[in-house]
Image 1 (cartoon, rainbow, N blue to C red):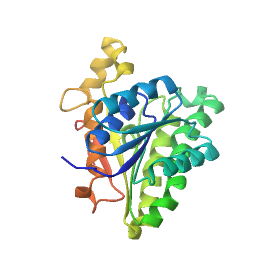
Image 2 (spheres, rainbow, N blue to C red):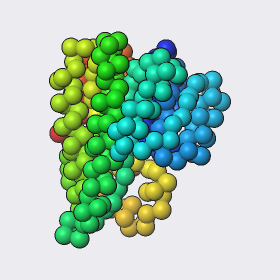
Image 3 (tube, rainbow, N blue to C red):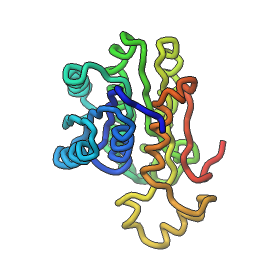
Image 4 (cartoon, rainbow, N blue to C red):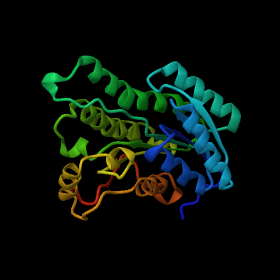
Length: 248
């Protein structure tokens, strides 16, 4: 399904959760993986998982808010593997609070990581993609960027910005055989949601028509489709994977 043989994919925030699932899925498809995150020990675990299934992976501990560090990482990846065909911007953080109580530092931290970080990565990989006249970029957005949510103005603004960034860059590079799309996950079962109170989980489930949370593997499958040759005519698109929670 959706072969990625011979491709090189860079996945940010890939030490755990959705990023890890995406990295494993792309590796299963045959891609060599460039893993980036701030948590080096967990990155090492993912490298071992990929190698155990017969794949190839290298890791870099990098802060995506630092443009110079991101560019250095991309340069090192190009030197080690020769190219970067696929970029998945998954790195992200939350600092939830009501707007009237939100600290400016928390607003800036989320925007810098989630939106600036994606811009830094795109800016760093595009020159090589343009030269080879091939590229696949997928940015991870969120259902709340389209539907809204209380207490997440910074996170929602960053993810809405991701959708706008996706469409702008898609228009700029389409003639270079580079597609740029977004995936907007709904409520996904993760280690974070496992620890939520039962009443909170029930409220979340009541908003989802299919009656369950999604899985990180379902998000990863959507990403793998968008970076495959089967999706070569899709660009500037937001793929909603949310169990019907938001329909547009």
